[in-house]
Length: 426
Image (cartoon, rainbow, N blue to C red; front, side, top):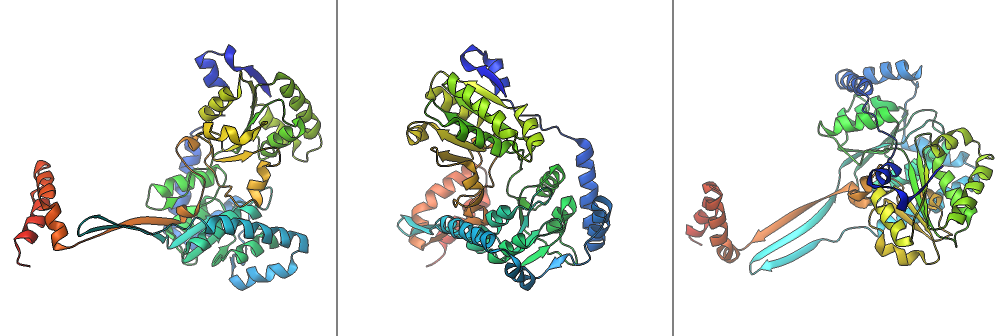
């Protein structure tokens, strides 16, 4: 990890120190994805099958898994893994259930009632990546909030092979239909619908660059998405009280996600930086994904700050997906931290608890989007709408203001909608 001293950097150097790896706009990927989407849109199931055979080598013979098959997987799961899934479901469910919005109803003036209501999005698509590891936790983070929010149809897609833990989690979280397909063609099936896969209103979940590009393209065609998903990242703020082994473990827990991940340590202690570097080297050597983590470390940095206040300023400028605070009084820094996907306070709060079982959601804004975007929550599976109801007297009290503003905007019909009512006999 490159080490820099913040105070010795000019503005350009500071920007460079906080720069992430470039998200290259690959026109070839965009064109490939566009062709995939069009194929599924026109050919439905046949298009999904042909594309899956082209990219994955084979199409599963039984690519539809019914709810009873999902439930049966629990009988084949070993007891400890099943208990871990259950514990995660309890905590995630408890935290997200507490997020249920309250209906707001207010008389803003005599005879004028305004309301704010929420309803679940009717049909949601949940993309759970396959690849190098079965992402059981992603099933929990997507399907459980969808169930709690009250979404009527929860459709999950995931590449084969699908292990029993994925099926058990899907069953426990109320997934209505599961299809063993992946890639951009799976996103297309959710966005447009096929003879087998139902069309959804919003698509959730991370994926590779083809999946991310597919989500971006269908979002411009009327299907909502949760958020773009970039490479995983963590920033750790630490002082000389931090345990260097803990800090190193937290950095490596994100570095092992992939070569394009980025990890940052911001500290006001040069001695801690030295100790963490030694710990990173020691722990890295024992990791099964050491090559991948090492590649991520090569584009990561240690930043020496003058103070914890400056460390917080640096973190806010970077706006990390995950922010870990290991200082003497971590909660005292919380009011200074304004931009992060999720914050982990103190030495006993590793980022991995948020990935799995603490209860918060691990689908988070990346690549600096935490400056304006939020972590996935129950609200993402719902939409808000307003209601207003006026009596004749209430309308009379607003009529002059409405007609004056409408005339000022040159919208006579708007004004007429009020004056005609006021001229009518009660």
